[in-house]
Image 1 (cartoon, rainbow, N blue to C red):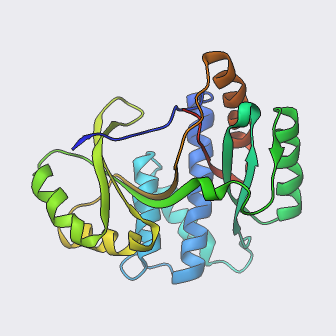
Image 2 (image 1 turned 90 degrees about the vertical axis):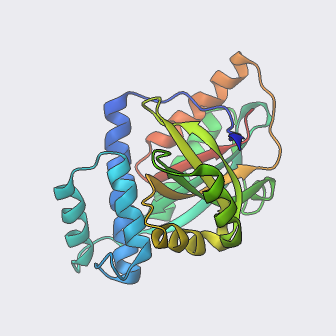
Length: 240
């Protein structure tokens, strides 16, 4: 086990803006999970995962409970999860995950961001073939026998395991599995009494595009614009 591969991180906006954005994203994630599987996390694995993710970004308990209650109401927006694909400047491929109640608005905004950022929004399938959709779990390493855990989880779809750091510089274990094995991996961790810091789906680039610092700044500005849009959940890229 070594340090897990990660592509270059884009420049992030101010911490308080990022936290507000994370709360909005998690709120939509909770709404989608409740609509699909009900408000009880004991019987709704997607909701359990959303609550874990909410805790990982320090979302207060009362806000989590309020998001669940709102999702049970009749007037809650029906969010649709849509993946958009495009190219940024310097040939960097970009995937944009959204949760939107108005896809016409979302498309118009994304086209504007890509055009102003020196890129172009593409058609479905134009970029995603360059990425692999995977499940990603982050664990606190304390109290874990890492070698033993890695061996045991291979039977549940583990493809990659390594170390990384969180936003506060703390070491975390990162586990990756094929997207189709996500539920199996989540249950295996639960059966072992391990609660992930977070459990999400990510798109891993098959190959990366090398860029210099000036080019990386151009791409990062576009990614930052995308990330600040209320309809955007996550942005993935293949910038090295």
